[in-house]
Image 1: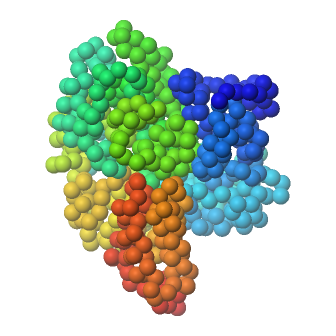
Image 2 (image 1 turned 90 degrees about the horizontal axis):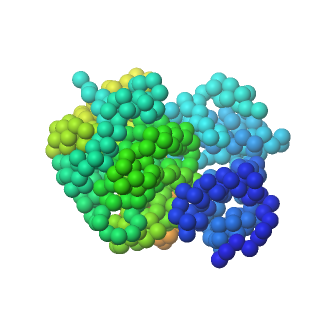
Length: 166
Length: 426
């Protein structure tokens, strides 16, 4: 399979350069190895979620069958297929965080933001997601927002964190 | 008196410990230079690693020197060294701090391992959520390359080797070595049937060795100070130091690098003891995939492979989850069962369907809707998953549950009979 499209809507300019840098990490005949970073990058530029068009573009660019990209995009938990908040609050739901109060963290976030897990605030700013162990159990309860970890959460620290997000 | 931070965390207390200057000022890359100069040949390194007694730190505990000896370094064609930094077993957070605070030691370990097996390239598979550790590791690779320690014809040795990172995207199963390979190949992370093993058919079908982050980061110290030194730090059948990630109901959760064979009670004390003035109820000593041990069994054990096995569990990844005497075991098992159900890759029917069964039945019990026959159903389902699946995830889903039923069946029965936990005031 080879790339047939000459014009991409998303994979151009800086996005293309970022994906190309990942492609260069793998042997020349293994472009599909860059599918995970490519999906991550286009999801990020698209405001946090993937669409069929984006996945098709990634498939075409990497010389993959679209179904092979859909498989990857639906297997890994970090890819989103519906709009999420500008800030996706990923609260760790696993055992060590449970022992130290993740249920209270989720309850507090739901109450404070007026939305449930899986929903987006009406202004599009926040959404809440329960995720499995994020590997920071020493700082339980914790959550991830964007690329950052926030550990040892309390109501006060949550107030502060959310107030600091634009 | 605990001996702390003698290997992987030895630099963690230093300012900018992740910087190449700090690493080199503390003996960093000296072993790598000796290897390139021909002072240490691959066979000698393997012997030294065998002597050290180090066993895979990701959880399986396979002897590292033996694993390396499966590779034929002179075989033509590409070969790969992979580092498994897909740290995701609930309770595990030790590798994260290697990458954040001592990434160069991991880089050096990967380079040495790569040289020993004749690899042309290495990939560190880091879970996608670990952005800060990824940046630290990536920067370390960049610094090493700029210092001429990586790349083509390294330090005039004629040896070419480079290192890259692959970022995961939220799938616990990719910590299984063949799922990890599939993931780097741009596919769903579903484990491969073995054999063939990665040493003969690994990444892109090429011979491949996969080691855990802690294992690889220990290698430079083993070779700098000698296999005997490392072995002597530990106990019989468990050489060296071990990173224990202590979480849950303790006053000071965190990572502790101690010697193998350290008494559990000393580790618990180092972590500040049980919080809120409570008592220890039980421990999961090696991560969510290992059996729960009641306090009386845990308090007497030593933290090494045989010590924990004797107490009735497994060292696993060294992820020590502490639970106080107010902990509702049914709720704990509901949480763990949810994890395995969520993370099952869906390939093998007993795991895909069985983990869902376990979760739904335990959830039903916890919600007060349990039926008298539920405990027998749980036992029968765990027996049907164990041993009938390609990888360890399905087995793992049954281990904590089986141990909970063994030690705390009365708590499940209380829920079924009374609709609530033994701790609920009626």
